[in-house]
Every structure is written in C-alpha cells, then in structure tokens.
Figure 1 (tube, rainbow, N blue to C red):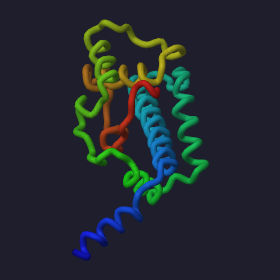
Figure 2: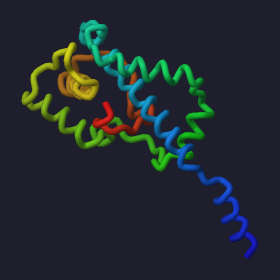
Figure 3: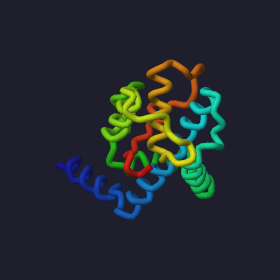
Length: 160
C-alpha cells in the first residue's frame, strides 16, 4: 500500500512543467535543424557542390549557434529527452523515420516530379529531401557521413 503512495508522490515530484517542456522542445527543434544542416552540408560536399551556395543552411547555422550559446550539454540533452513526449527510440536508417511531408518530397525528387533545387532559393526541407534522394536513390555520395536517424532527431518538415 505504501509503495503505490510513494510511486504517486515520486511521479508528482518528477513531473515536468509546461515551460520546461516547451524549452526542451525548442532545444530539440534547434538540434534537429543543426543536424539537418550538417547532413545537407556533408551531402552537398560529397556531390561536389559548394555548400556555401545553399542559402538556407544559414537557418541551420543559426540553430547551431543558439545551441552553442546555451551550452547544450549531454546532461541537458538527457534531461530534454526525459521531458519530451517522444519515446526516444532511434528510428531505423531508412525512410520510415521521416515524417510524411519529407517522405513525399523525397518521393517527388525520386520520381523526377521535382527538378534539382535551386540552392539560392530552396528551403532547408527541399535541400534535405533532395540530399536524401541523391544519397539513397543514386548512390552518388560516398563514405559515411552524418545520419539523422542515428542522432535521434525527430522533426516536422513544416518547421524547416
């Protein structure tokens, strides 16, 4: 009987406040943007394209700078994972880990529906989807670069 009461007290004491959860979700979004930028930058370089031409990589750079300014530590990432509503499982390294809008973009690039993106105009989501298609679809990239699925990044393409 006391164990049940102690468990409820423990749960009440460890509940995460709404502002804490919102801050954790903001940091998770920044981490996802920074990681996507890293993947896009690496993929472009592997394709022989100067990443500096991709204007929207500035969004990823800004996210990385904001994370650096707040001293994003491993302990903070672990605390954020506990505060998050996500289960924290690392998705498999295929398209299953992508959200539906990103998956549709990748498929449109694969099917030739969308042309190669204009690096000066393309959104970060478009660049990301195109890089995934180029990496998975043609095998044009070589080596083992950064992988979002192994970074555990969950994101919505609408935020890119």
